[in-house]
Amino acid sequence: MKRASLTLILRLVALQVAVHSVTFSLTAAFAPRVLLLDSETSSASLSVVGVVGVLSCLFSVVATFAITRRLRPALRSLSLDAASPSPADVLALYAVPARLAIASAAFSIVVACAHLLPELRPQVLDTYTALALVLLVVTMVSTAALPAYVAMRASMARALELAPPRAAHEALRSLGRGALGRVRKRFVASVAAPVAFVALGASLLVDAHVRSFDRDARITDATDFARSAFDPIEQSATHDGTSRTGPIVEDKRGRTEVVEAAATLGFRVHIDPSYRGVWTVRRGDEGETQVRVPMESGAALVRFGTPNLSRVTAFYVVLALCAIGLAALLGMQIAGAFESDVALATREMSRAGTGESRFHEARFTSMRALLQAVGSLSGVFREFAGAQERSIEAREATERMRGLLLASMSHDLKAPLNSVLGFAELVGRNPLSDPQKESLSIIAQRGRELLMLIDTILDSARVEAGELEVSAAATNVSDVVMSSVLEARDLAVGTAVTVQAEIQSDLPSILIDGTRIVQALTAVVMTAVRFTDKGVVPVRATLPDTGTRLQIEVETSGEGLPVGEREKIFDAFKSAESARRHGSLGLGLQLARSIFEIHGGTIEVEHTDGGGMGFRILLPVHNDRASIRVRATKPMRPGG
Image (cartoon, rainbow, N blue to C red):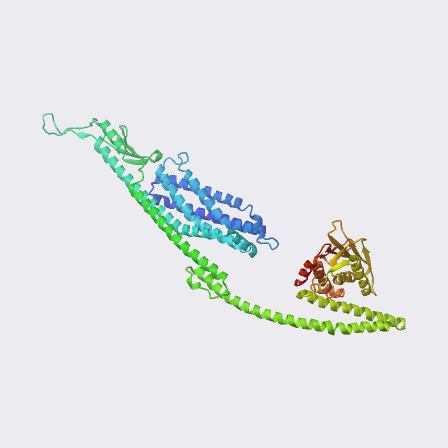
């Protein structure tokens, strides 16, 4: 169903867009507070976050349709009974959520890092502020990738539940032992990643506070420095050493030295005598801070750059790395415990039914529940094993009873029937009227049919038990074919069907049990007679050019069976309605196929040009007694 697959794809798109929207909205809301940005810097950071968010949403849409494009037939086949996805398709669908989560997170991180370039970064953001903003975006995007992956995994799991168990099992087998290694890595990542995100966020917060405190202190230092160094002073002394108050004068001596000394401390000073305003602080290009300090005449413009990472920030970074390392070790310990539980579950499954489950040794609740289920299943297996043993004993008793029944039937049924046929033949030697001869002929014919039916039932039972006796000898093919044709003619007396033999000259002798092949071929010919209302049933024996297999063809001229029922004709009682309609129990062809297969041959049924059915029998020309004896010990397949 195309609509179902499209719905799943759209759901994946909606999940990613929703996660990106929430992630970048929270980033835009918390960035000014976490990084302690002023209003001008906040506006620039919001523009960066907005651009990254919009591009990430667009990329998620495009990536989802691109990644799932090749898998759409597999998605549609999950909703169809006629088609099933292959194990490779199941694995590819299983990997879709992870591929989408990684691709979206990687794209967002790359776009965010691109804003570190001077060409793309807003001028009001200095390098360190932009780096802190990018790290915050990376933290938020990486954190959001986990719920996005979990939500997409849940949606895809509902679709994968429709996959056939065989395909899912083969897909799991193809993963091999590497699957457990991936689970171990995921355990480590699930423990270390949150700690890394928290540590990174804490480091960004500490760095933001340290840099804000440092910037405020430098603003204060710049203001005090400008006022003390460049403000005019009062004349308070005379040339004779007496003190008096005089006018305020501006002393410009030594200003060059002061400016040079300030430059060594990172302050660039410029005197603007035309400025008439108030004290201001603003951001310049590349994150430079500009402090304008008003004086009696003009103002002093002091510029200084953004401070680098402090030792305090570096200390917190080291602590964050240590916390991540400890978390990774903890994750490895948890993964090791999970791996031991998986190994325990594997051992318990392999020995299910042989003992009590040791579910109390499992450390994880899910594994403990699994082992409890295995223990319950082991009890069911033990009960099933006991029932199977009783079934085997009952089957052996049934086999013994069947053997006694067959021995009894072989004597109790065939002996009276042979007597009836013998006395019918003796009566036929006496002078009889035409009606009496006709009645006697019917008795003889029905008796032979009944005798053939009894032999078929007994031999079918012997084949199923693997006890059919076969005596192979070099036999002339023409004799076998003619014997079956003559016997079929006798059995077809009273019908409007004629059995005709067409035998290729110079056919070689082959190693077969002639009696059994005649019995099987007669059953095939009589089946063709039953499916023919009137006309001729040809029996052709030829040796194709290859010369390795003898070919015997028997055709019907009446209406054949539908294509769906033709194979059932070889299975006893599988097509009961057809067998009853054509006067047969369906055992003849089943026994015939078994006899041909014992000799290394085959029998097939196909449609003929006249609308009927054709039976093609192939027997190997070159055979040996050893192979026939081996085949003769094999029991007949159930149902044919």
